[in-house]
Length: 225
Figure 1 (tube, rainbow, N blue to C red):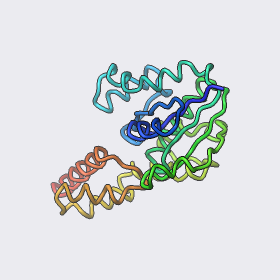
Figure 2 (cartoon, rainbow, N blue to C red):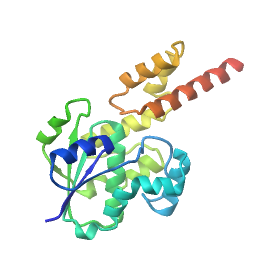
Figure 3 (cartoon, rainbow, N blue to C red):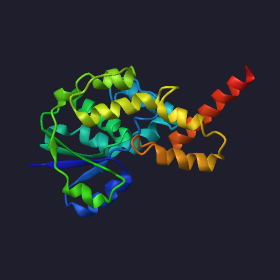
């Protein structure tokens, strides 16, 4: 049986590949950040994501090459094991992968290992591999990532990720309120605070800085009026 592991990023994948003697590839997207259009990794999606992330289409495709090569050869893969964190960042990436597999008609087994990235990575190897049915996640990609509307998922971890994702992108969401109430701090200390406050969201420092700039802009506009 041909089994391939898809991991939550390059750093974990490098460690994981040294521990498990099976093929593993990283998923190098950040679906928590910016907006989305179209089906995952179709032309419209790729062009839009490259633009949103501020890179060329060729650079975007190069970064995603290991994953895209797997997607192009799904018929040769009997089982995929997805290693992702419990935070919203990883859950939205996971949702995108599941939508990709659904749209490609993947017929093999799908299993997921969900772990807390703030704990020693060795703990992830002790976690149970949970079998996944794509039916559980049907319609979520369109509703949550394309339309940014609330949706109900039977999977508890994904449901939590959805709620955190939608709250993060709300101008009056929890993270934005925390930022707005601490704008008196210098940027370095504010960034450190936000990174500590958003472990459940899995916010990157880049996205945190973008939110800080947005909060400052909103504050300036408010003061100007």
